[in-house]
Length: 176
Image 1 (cartoon, helix red, strand yellow):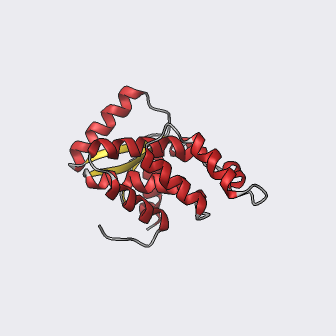
Image 2: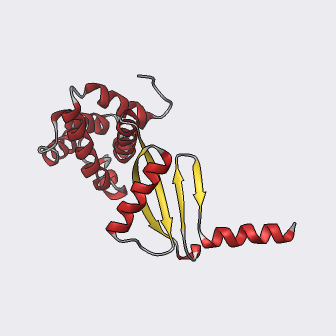
């Protein structure tokens, strides 16, 4: 597997190589997704507190991670020992991206003017998957400034079918 320039990505690639099978990959991903929000600025500052001996910080961290897979637990302890504990959220994101890429899943960001219910979200994702011929993992956001419609970002491709976007386009046409 190629090594990229990002430290978080390199740790994620190494963790992916350590996963023996798809079950382990799923466990590692679920574990990292649970841990990522825990390592906010306050937690990281506490774990980096120089007045507390590293051995005590390591023991406390290991105790807090006792229910996590041993490989993930070892990685997080290693990150603490190397003073790179702040990378946990980025490693989680990079690991998810690597797993998705390996499974042929693209990320989509859908922004709508109003919140969509679950049935509407599922329908929209199905339609986008059919149109793009790609399995998608979608996240949703709301921007009332769009007035109506939606903006969909899949990779570096942007589809703007918002009313705001159409009004801007109309304005450009009228101005030229």
